[in-house]
Image (cartoon, rainbow, N blue to C red):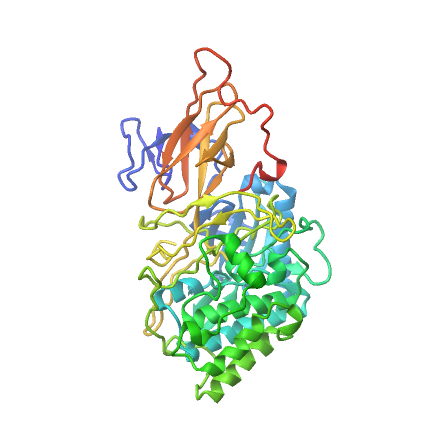
Length: 530
């Protein structure tokens, strides 16, 4: 028997290629280390699984229902590999605990947690109807203040609720906001992914991060985050200012060809006025956003709510009427093209973590949904430890995604991504059905040689079998598999879906072992950067 690495369908030995995905089939033995899917009808706590919504590098997301009361939910299941890692399990629990501490209508609700009989950890959360804010923005380009400000106000109120409980989000960005479309046409934003949230004033037990290691997403990080300094609620205010600038102008306040350049701009470059990027906006809106983007935290508004209310008041002085609640029928503006002619991208929207991975935004479910379209251009992943401002460690450096012409949406149902992928409401005037698409794919490399390592463009991705993460793209990439005493071998991968590849390494006929790593050990911090 053989199996398709994409759809996991089984075929007889006489079939070599999946007729649905056009992928070469792999022997069933290659999937021996993969987690088994939860079948329809399986019970997870009090909920019965109905279908799998998506899968990412850290686990899978399932649609489930309570058999007695009919309540639907999303179940996020941590993979067996990460469920055996105490630190990752601790972060998984911490995210659920942080969300439940806040309990706000504009924050995703997590209401159950536990472990499956095989040891995999899970939690149960509400199943949302709508689309991610970044997908919404990608289609709109920029939003009119009448549309944008009610959404930003709801996000600010969610942040204020988190801050009141002593929790800083630290990774605020459009991808971590989900727009729920109500039947009456109103839009309710939901704040997602508290995977790197931190208690104010103290490190969460078991989650201390390396000194000088920034946590967050480069394009939205505050100067103090870029410096690797302690943060408080005003770091979220800064990120909210970045998001406000992006939503209203169609472009980020700071952008560059490299992550390092973006971090330096956050730390030292004066923020631009929105009216410079978008002359159509009233100049009255500049000052409130600039105050959110102040380099010194002490010069920013004391709260997210106060910051957005100042922006709303400025809009009112400019003659703009702002509704109390966002509406799906509110005015939207034409797509604002970038220099490449495509809608303004959310470039560098990749979480940065400490080199040991302790600060990674953990399994954001809006990134855990499979992607079928194959039109995304490859994003080159650079894995390095780079010194910034006295030794800041940065991992997972990525190129801008400005060449991504299609929204990260799909009719099937990650990430991006929290595990809230569902179809949208079908009522008139409401956005069409979308599901969330991960920015990365997981590649599992099954090698016959022990202690095999996997490399891309001279950079070590990690140890086989992984799973290893690659940026999603249509262009094929060549991975090199190495092991001491074996001849390196290459394999081509199309990073359009999670995939399992089998590689056979051969021993050289004569001579010293090929690929010996004696005296060339990579530091522990980089042995498994993904």
